Length: 175
Image (tube, rainbow, N blue to C red; front, top):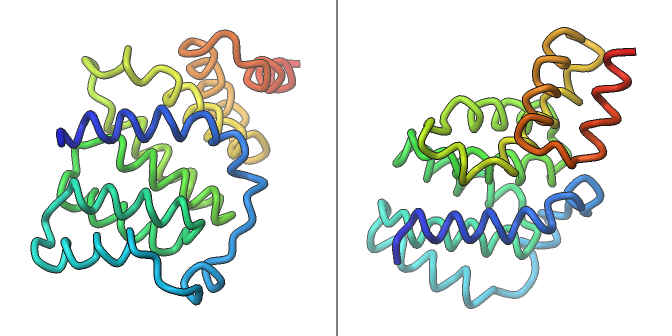
């Protein structure tokens, strides 16, 4: 399977549920203490045989996310980023996992890395995700660096002018 196709699909599917990330319960201990997950177990064996199999790693990270095992999802996305450092979707997925785990500081850093890693030729295909990443950074910066927040919210609206949350934040920052 083409890794870029897989991740684009995962990100598009993830963007539908991404809005709920801040309200998702984080219970890594419960997720890891449950009986074994055959999908996760199978992917782990596949990765043991080939630790650089980014396709299997991506599927494993997705399986961890499906199980709300944010700690293992984050660690797996980090492995993918180490193997594919110029591949922006891995940073977006890390940010999603961090945000789901209520680790806002690392989520912000991962969104910033995602923004910095998206190549110019990939912008069109990544507009919605870029809009959200810029929104998240702006939201995070609104009390500490209002000018940076204004710059980021303007970019967010540029990529998604229909995002009502971004429009409201922009109005609040500029009032």
